Image (cartoon, rainbow, N blue to C red):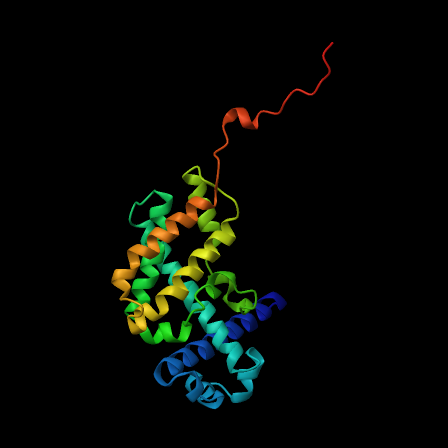
Length: 222
């Protein structure tokens, strides 16, 4: 076996064990709640030694953040995949569809919502996510920018816009879904979508015309 093949095998095994730990912890967290689950239980469910856990995660809090980051990013992956099958081309409608899809999934998976809590934006903006997830993460910001460009829309800052939209949806819908407070999610949705549309419009820049892009002739007149 060459040095490269040996390294690749070790890296593949590392990813596999990492995923075992993450999936085992995710199942246990949903079943029992984060506080009730011990690291030993996670290791047992994952089929690894307890010491192996600490090769990948410093503690349970770091593991929880990694899980939230991975699972919330997966939500956006599914939402974008579903969007691509709809044929929706309008930019605002695309954003509304993605947010609506994510909320619908969380509404029907409330245990997952309790785990993710109001941290939905971690799946897009976390700087601490384990590198082993990077090959499976979707660059949501790039997807947003590309969609805006296809609609000839210029945004002041796509990353900030997306952050505001996700934080708005995550923070306001948590209680609506779990407790129907201050009102049921079905009633709240139209208000949320109107607010998202206003956010998008507030962050748009004027469309440049061809004349705007022509550089002036700065040569001196003879």
